[in-house]
Every structure is written in C-alpha cells, then in structure tokens.
Image 1 (cartoon, one colour):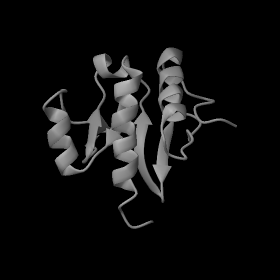
Image 2: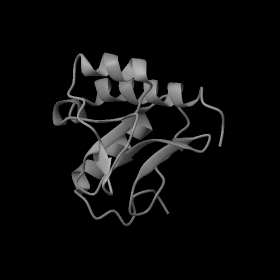
Image 3: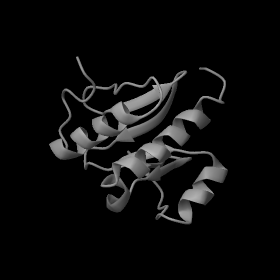
Image 4: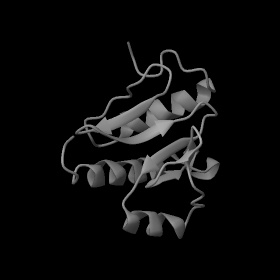
Length: 116
C-alpha cells in the first residue's frame, strides 16, 4: 500500500508531498499509512502532518541557511519540539522546484548519519 493511504489531512497536501518525493534525486518512497514520512538508513527526514504542513530535517548549518530565506518556527508534534526539523511555509510548498532542492539537501545530509 502506498504511503499516506489512510492520511486524514488535506488531499492536495498529500499529492504535493508525493510530487516532491517523486521528483527528488534520491531513492525515496513515502511511508506511513496515516502519517506520511520519508526515511533513509533508519532516520526519518521528512513528514507531512495532519494539518497538511510538511517538515524536513536539516543540519544546524542548513537550518541557518534556510532561515535566511524562510521562517524557521519550531516544529511541534504531540507536544514536543522536533529538533532539527523546519516547517515548509506555503510559499515554498507551492514552489516544487525549490522545495525539491531543499528536500534533496535533507536527503544528502541525513545520509551522512550512521545507519540505525
């Protein structure tokens, strides 16, 4: 079953998330039936929450660079701050080409971590 098959959030957000994942340069698939996410070597590096907000995981240096162009409010899930994650603002979520660039950078960085 494809990732997101039981997703309860906005359908257009799931469609865009899948579009970004499919356009990425890595060998990535959307996992998770209710909570769509991507991972590499056992490390989750992106997800789509039930409100339709996408988040990606970046290194500290990449978060700083990202913050020069986009808002970097904390990503909070189930009452906890998701350290290392940045929320994707609507303006970036609508720009697939730019978003794929950031998604690929996340994928590349997460590949430098030891596998779980």
